Structure formats: structure tokens, C-alpha cells
Image (cartoon, rainbow, N blue to C red; front, side, top):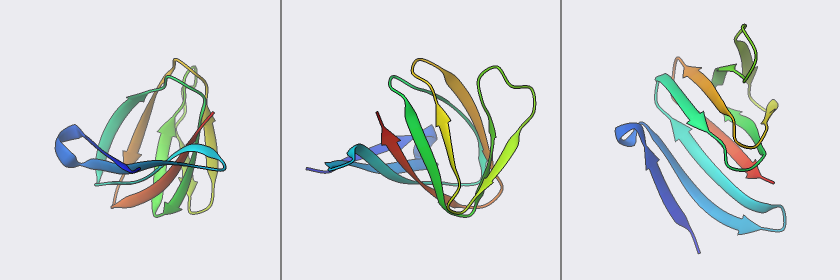
Amino acid sequence: MFKVNEYFEGKVTSLGFNNKEGAVTIGVMAAGEYEFGTSTVEYLTVTSGKMSVLLPGETNWKTYRESETFKVEKDQKFKVKVEESTSYKCLYK
């Protein structure tokens, strides 16, 4: 079944489900800055728009655009900035 997730007072919303890839969420982010934590390895793919990401241990932000993916290891925190509404897919491993 589907699970609706809402974070940051509704500024980040996702729909979670399982398929042959495993646990997946498809979500949207309103313009803003956010910090997330992981409990598994996460592969995030931008599906529309762009997001700037500060990965753990890094000092420089990197911008990811549509169809680009980044990986965040388990039990880490990372920061995201979006300038306009942006959508993403997150695969949990």
C-alpha cells in the first residue's frame, strides 16, 4: 500500500511504496533549505527541477539536475537547497 509522508510543515511531501527495486518514495520539495537524515543507504534522483546538496564530509555544495542521482550512506545527515519546486525519486537499500 502507499504511505504519504510530510515534512517541514508540508514543504516536503512524498508517497512511499514498494516495488521490484525495493522501498521507494516519489516526492516534491518547495523552494527552501532542508536537512535530512538517513537510516539506510539512499539513492536520490532528481526527476524535475534541480537541487543543491551538501553531502556528509563535504564542504562544497553540488547541484543535481533532472535525471542525475546522488548516494547518501546509512546513518548520515545531508543538506538540500531548492530554488523552485523540485521533484525526486528516492530508492532505499
